[in-house]
Each structure stands twice: as C-alpha cells, then as structure tokens.
Length: 115
Image (tube, rainbow, N blue to C red; front, side, top):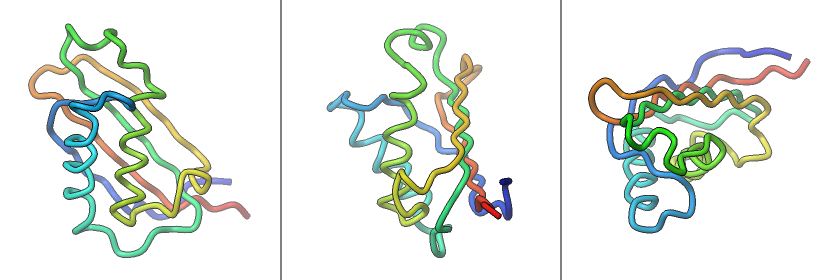
C-alpha cells in the first residue's frame, strides 16, 4: 500500500480552529472548502492526507489537539468534493508547528493504492 498521484497541495491561511468550537469552526471549514473546491476534479476512492498546521505560539497547546484539528479539515474536504468520506482516508499524517507568521494549514492529498 502506498501513495499514488498527488491530487492536492494547497496552503490555506486563516485562524486555525478545532472541531466543536462553534464561533470559529464554521468559518474555518468554509475557508478550506472555498480554497479546495476550484482545484478539485473528482475524489479518489481511497486517499492519503498530510495536514501540517501552523498555529500561534500562545494557542499551540491550548486545546488544539491534532485529532480535533484534523476533523474540520476532513469535513471541508468532503464538502469540497476532494474526498468521498472519512472511511476512504487510509492514511492520515497530522503535525502542528508554531507559526512564524499567520496561522495556516498545508493540505496534501494523494491517491492511495491498495494493491
């Protein structure tokens, strides 16, 4: 099993939000959806995703768990048509770093080859 063709490689700048944070989650998901939708053709059946979050130093460990950071991005990728749904994500690599400038997420998505 391995990564195939890279389908998406994009950086979305904005206040990073975790899942279940109502005042910030919806705008963050919308921003990701709007950035990804124009570059999405059709979702691969199975995929691999790498998410690299850059978060301000003071917010880096303030409730920004990597699993909760990933969920709004996965939801936005589904709405944008970049992935079929969460069960079709076979590999997920999530890392967070202190931001040196604006907060952002670097999203990379590959086709996942299972045979």
